[in-house]
Amino acid sequence: MIDSGSKYLILGGNGMLGRDLQAVMQDRDFVSLDRDELDITDVEALKTKILDVQPDVIINAAAYKDTNKAESEEALANEINGYAVGMLAKICRDFGITLVHISTDYVFDGRRRDGYAEEDATCPINAYGRSKALGEQLLVDEMEHVIEGVDLEEGKYFIIRTSYLFGKHGVSLVSKLMDNARKGEKFKVINDQYSRPTYTLDLAKQVKWLVESNEYDSGIYHICNGGSTNWYELAKILLTDAGLDAGLVEACSMSDWKAPAERPQFSVLLNNKLPELRTWREALKEYLS
Ligand SMILES: NC(=O)c1ccc[n+]([C@@H]2O[C@H](COP(=O)([O-])OP(=O)(O)OC[C@H]3O[C@@H](n4cnc5c(N)ncnc54)[C@H](OP(=O)(O)O)[C@@H]3O)[C@@H](O)[C@H]2O)c1
Image (tube, rainbow, N blue to C red; front, top):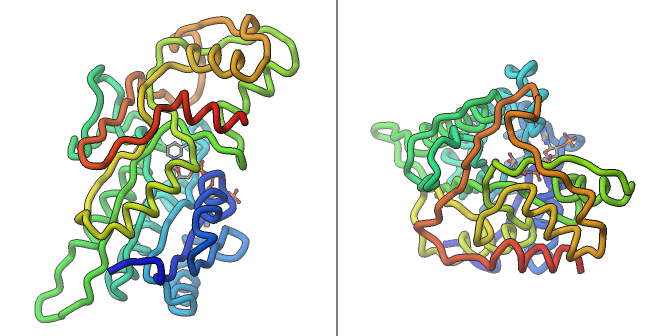
């Protein structure tokens, strides 16, 4: 049973999502750590720190996140996004700790225009997506592993997939669009890649609510703001709402955009399990306020 008296440990706490997780946990007992205090790939340090903090819930927002660089650093991406998550899950299972792990729409190939449900099989098309899918798989393997004759305390798990994050405390595509527009030069934005932009503060609040509701079973959940869009449409709306010159944005297609990593084209995550969040447009207004 998780409630307002439970103790939280946030990993990756200085990242864009981590900072908003800290903000929503201000009325809770929590410890937040980032890479300089705890490298999650160091299994001994991970175990020692967890035993020291004694959390009821761990939220893992730590990640290797550079999608392009991951193409040439796949082993490192797998260490952080894959094997470290498996080790974390084993520790959580052994000590009956609830584990919330943040994952991504990039575990899918983006070829389905009607979106992806929670239980759809993963099918990543780049190294970052493969590393995140590996983490999901190792987490489930560890948390659902039953050792015969050993009665372990039950630790629940929630794999939270989300997409296109933007937040006040980090660099995102939204913040890069604003920076480009402030320079006053024309720039190109892709108009045929679709997903669901999500405000980190809304995601953080929903994670807290989900864990403390105690109504939901272990499993995979999709948490995104409502609606979907492409980057060109979002850029136009963002710059107009921000009072910047939306005329600086020129549309281009994914095929014109040369990047080391291929991206999923339609990575719309369907939410079939949880109450809907407000739309990304409403969330964007608050982000800008
Ligand atoms: N941003 C998006 O658009 C997006 C979309 C879908 C899903 N997600 C997922 O959402 C989660 C949060 O993303 P975010 O945008 O908040 O990422 P972020 O700002 O890059 O934060 C990640 C944090 O993890 C830390 N970290 C990296 N390697 C670590 C290690 N070995 N041990 C401990 N900490 C480590 C980073 O520290 P350093 O800065 O020192 O590396 C950083 O503070 C991630 O799981 C990501 O995959 C993000």
